[in-house]
Length: 139
Image (cartoon, rainbow, N blue to C red; front, side):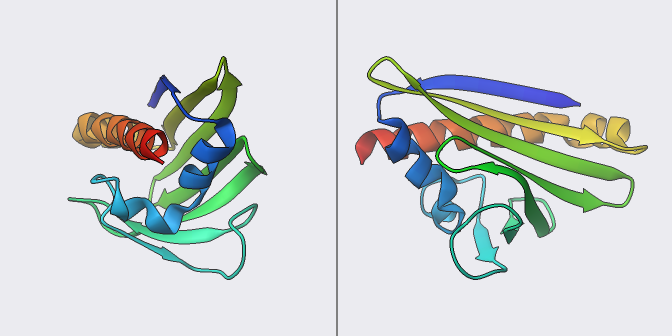
């Protein structure tokens, strides 16, 4: 299963990135994430890990597997039978930004997980984008 969503944001890319890459603060503005615990020290980047709690889901550890400062980070979490990768991209567009978020699940249990929780996954990614947009535009 893959779900992707994009939107224009009326804020400079560096301002959007600052909000997006500060994952520890996501619970302050994103109701799809109730808790984040960074599992490493220093700046968020390649190899960084965080434990996220989302409503109705177990805590999951996400590890950054691709990182380009100011533009992109992808991270992955694994559970028995399925790997989930979430992507986040910010680029300049006119006077503002364009953000794309996506999630992809692979593995032998991915079709079952998509059937059982695909609607929730799509709702959470959409909530993340809408929350990011609101937070970045008010900054």
